Length: 473
Ligand code: GLY
Ligand code: MN
Ligand code: MN
Image (cartoon, rainbow, N blue to C red):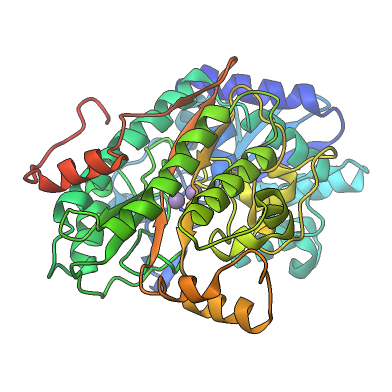
């Protein structure tokens, strides 16, 4: 947890954005894994944590925009809880740690909200993403659970996005800690990417690194020799020479700030010529687009820069043809890059995505494209200093997509399908970094993670050592 002033200042800034009504922020509840008492590892709601800091289930926080009151609703533990969980600070003590003096039992929340509602006051809340929270909020607000999400407050969503999209130095330093741990996760995976290994051995080891540093991982580890499957979460394949291992993984700090890094490693430590040729295109797309990141440029423009680089590169190899501008305008590159260049990152790895992708990544000036592939671009709007985002171009040879586009006669003027067919066994390559937009340009966050062919091959050749990132937790 940060010092109480951090949370007090965040609440103050929110009060400067809204003047009517009050906002209620719900802490996450415990979530059952396979029976009620066996729960998933507890994860606090990111918005509750941002404004109220406490990593405790079942609390609620209220900010009143009219009288300025700040309240935490929650209960002290009883002797049964102490027997099972050990002694806990009182609700008063916990609230005081985040600069709040007014507390009530959680059982008072329903009455409190009912009274506010009766007197015609607006109760702002953010859209819930867990079914149980929809039911809880429905009961508290006396609306059907199925309507809770749609009735969330757009003014509160907009205010929260406005505050949270600009990261403070403190937040950036947390994200950098998360990237430093990802450095160890990814360099370890490179060293383990030997023929005969099973993916799960590497996935388990790197998730263990996250946990050993206070983890958890910021999203389920994506690790596969089938890198053409973008978010492959099964880890049963045996690594074989000639394949590449895509590892997309990150961790989060105890204050819940994420990292999200992808590296692609040749099994056995040496890229083949064909792999190198494709890898260099993805690397150029990653590095040249990073160089373009600066305030006022729209991320959609940066995304299309990646599309141009990939199209040019594939043309040089004879996989694509025709005029690059025309090919990109038609969307032919989406056969190879069927996703967006990146997304906002913060306390959620796709930062604030639960508030609605368009509320976070788009605005009145930049509207989302409906073109296949480009529609997956989660961040399109103009960049501002303080944004933290990912830059993650890739090239994938997805046999089913190649066959589909070909059979539908799509992009015949831009794709050499006969040659592309010979690449159907290549898999996929993605390279992803976490970037801070600065006043004049950008900064790639954290300890540099091997990325060029020479760096990746050199890391693969190193012996694995057990390390801990100093001073992280
Ligand atoms: N880790 C999922 C993504 O890169 O967006
Ligand atoms: Mn990722
Ligand atoms: Mn990402």
